[in-house]
Length: 138
Image (cartoon, rainbow, N blue to C red; front, side, top):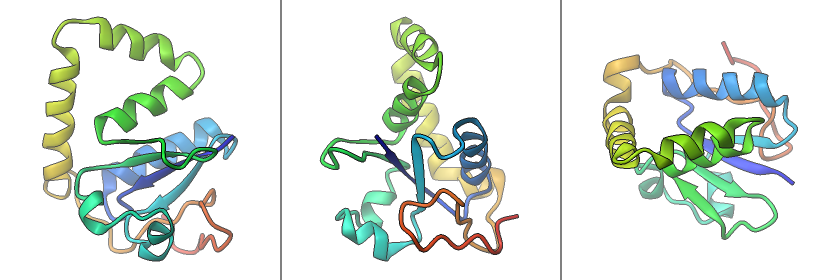
């Protein structure tokens, strides 16, 4: 089973988090597509407007199952080894989901100001399609 992570390939923070996830997962569970890859996103009927709401996680076996924004981050956490323990504890604390959603939105809306914008779009070696471009990934 695979999950597809749609991320902002021009965002320094987003790319750093994708690289961390790549290191942890080694392509076993997750495949990645930057929001800038409109051709691949069109296959999933994802528009640029959809991407403005934050990262997207798509269930590979049931593409109609999708999570976005902080919900996507939480679901990724649940899929990582021992991650569900932390996500369950986070969700159980009164008010944390509301705070987490607000925090995610602030980071999402100010990511370039806070963390900078890359000069080129990051392409993961574990891409969602067979045309991975691993040239300029630093």
